[in-house]
Image: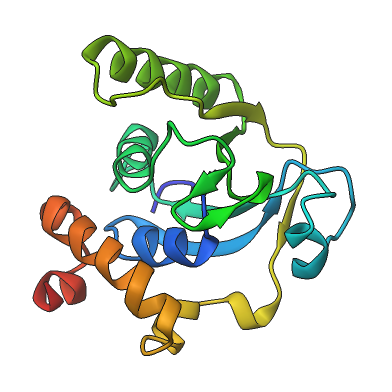
Length: 185
């Protein structure tokens, strides 16, 4: 495998993001966590107050020979509302903001390009408000957040929010799913 790369996306609840990105071919690992704030090593409880400045994010480690950063950006924009300020569905607060944390000039350029393209195409009814910011630090979430949907599929939040989002994602991105998920569609 060529050298793995990482991408960090905030698209609302990190449980949803982890569930989606984990199913893509070429994705090696997805870690839920926190980025973009001012407090080192924040806890979930601290982030939930909205006072730390962190967003719930997914750190996606991927093989660029199997899936490109551009494709990850396309998944990101197709699986959340990038026009909603500090919210996704019923999840409200700055920790749920739409944000791309880039590592390097190439990632920033690609993020800016896709936002401009989507705006030109009128892909969304409202303007895209996704923040594009440099990644200064990523803090993994607590262990109980790891693989949350896989371990808790019958929890009410998983049934009401994650499962429908995952079903929609699977139908739209069928050709990019790992073999096991293709059969589960």
